[in-house]
Length: 137
Image (cartoon, rainbow, N blue to C red):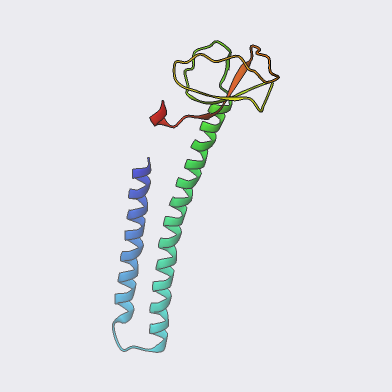
């Protein structure tokens, strides 16, 4: 999808550039007057603004897409809850749902420990707070 957008924006930019060149050639024929010079400057400025808008829109779409993917990952992380004794399937930092100050870093395949939030172990649910980087998985 991104390649198609780049291709579309590139084609639109080239079209604007070609139209700008044609207009500049047409208005540069004949003797130079201040009005012709002003028109040439306006054509150049307008063309640059149009090309800038084309690419700014593209980069805003890319930014919005990245933010949407980040929100999806955040929602995925916050929805993972496992119980003491379960085997870790998603490595990362987990927090006890009863004692928010109690956190554990879990590796793939390890079993979740009991929480010792009040100096006594108890079975609990652990909520994934942050996934481990891929190299640690």
